[in-house]
Amino acid sequence: MPAELLALQTNIVTLNVDAIVNAANTSLLGGGGVDGAIHRAAGPQLLAECRTLNGCKTGQAKITRGYRLPAKFVIHTPGPVWHGGHAGEAELLASCYRSTLALAKNNVIKTIAYPAISCGVYSYPLAEAVAIAVRECRSAADDFEKIIFACFDANMLALYEAELAKN
Image (cartoon, rainbow, N blue to C red):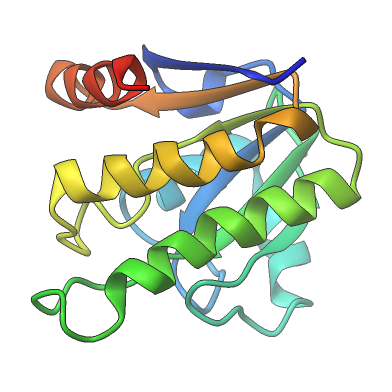
C-alpha cells in the first residue's frame, strides 16, 4: 500500500517520524532557515557528525543521526539556488527528492518529513517547487508508510494541499 502523503502546517523539528529532511547548504555545517532550526534543535552532536561528512553536492543527500530531535535521522540535501530556471534547477531539485528517498529506503525509514526545499533564501518559485516535491514523493510512495510535507505557513500549506488533490 502506498504511503499516505499529507501536508501539515508545523515545525519540522517537532515531528515524531523516522527521518526529517534538512534543506541544507553544501557545507552541511548549518545555516539559516530550516537548516539552522534543525541544527539548534538537534544539538551540537549534529554539527560534529556533519563535520565528518565533507559536505554534500547540490541534489545529493547524506544521512546523520537525529540526536535531540524526535526523528531518529536527519537526511541532508542541498537544494538548488534559483537562477531563473535555465541552470538545471528543476532537475537538481527533483534529484534532491530522489536522493533523499533512496537514502531513506536504504536505511529502512518508513516515515519521513520534508520542508519546502529551496523555497526560502534560495528563492525557488513556490508552486513549481511544490509540484516537483509531490511528483517525486508520489513516485516513491510504495516504499514508505507516510510522507509529510511540513509547511512553514498557511500559503505553503495551501499550495501543497492543492497539488496533493491533483491526480
